[in-house]
Image: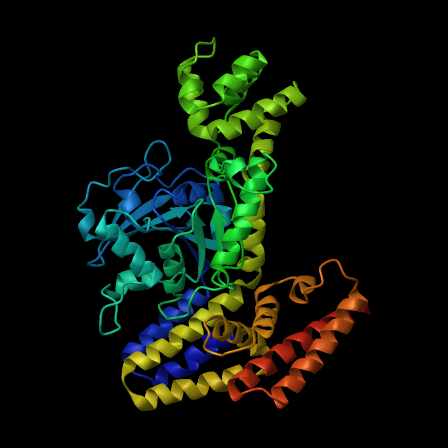
Length: 501
């Protein structure tokens, strides 16, 4: 907690306002990592939030709450707090169906955001922030989201939120960005504008990943090389989107949020499994006809009630229904629980969670510390006192010079290269990106599947190369980055050597 110690040490040496800001930074350092789920309107953000939390709690239909920022965090008692721009709070219960009420019974123009507390294990290590969709026709909703993303600053560089709202809402340290089939210019602008911890660190491969949601709606014939396979088409398209969005994001992964939500949050029941079992007994020609389109599926004359079919469609869509029926045909005695697990696997949620763990959870302390340093710098700059600014700057430089601050220096170097603040040759920039944005050693070294001895030899060779580059031929800015990368390789080599003993 070296950044927290820095804040604690500096508090008596700065103004009361800056000291209060440092207190907020320390509070955030001890809190779970805050991940904002952002994207365009109707991209399925709230559905994905429910799947990640494992509970259907975020409203997915257009209503009051979908126009507000909602923070889902761990609490010992399930409750909702409506936070007003004045700072006043009003506590509400969840609706009988377990969701946030569709109507809050208050003037939402006076609402800053919603705090939702849940007794949920996932939220003990990650606070999930659901945002209104970018591109919404509701200007107020867009403004709330842009405030969270740091995109709506006033002309003088200060934001329009009061302190309570800014501290509670503008503090996401990482972003999960949701796209659908087409990446638009404003998707890229939103990612570029995303800032961490009330400071101006842009989103990048350290603190941002994207998902291609509604992967089941992609027509495989529209994607070259898909071989009529929907999931293969989604994977190819996600790779293309990753190329468009990098280096703003670490990766783009396909996911089917609706199926993930139904399978993970208890929405898929034994009654649904039984309805699918009945559907599977229909003759092949009838089934194929019904699965051609949603309206045919619900209106076709058959013994399964139309209402039951509509419920299945709302929970699984045609792709999920087809996947489940195929599974029943392959294993007629499959249980409801096994069918649910199969649907969860088909949704792609496991891969998204694994990537969240690699990109966010495994380096949460580093991400939070880097965001905290950016906040400390911004707070000192905003004070307007040159002496205070210099005092904080000097303290940060001393901190970064310490060996234990290497992870912070690596994140800083990566951010500088990704943002273009330090101009590097393309191949070297790619190498910095790879070393700084991966948690696994073989991925950092670009040698997946290699043996320990080969990895160690490569790490040592690259450490020597970067040290030479730092001393000969690099500009001063490049040299600073090169020294950090050299140390990263050296520490990797050291770790590999120690683990071999």
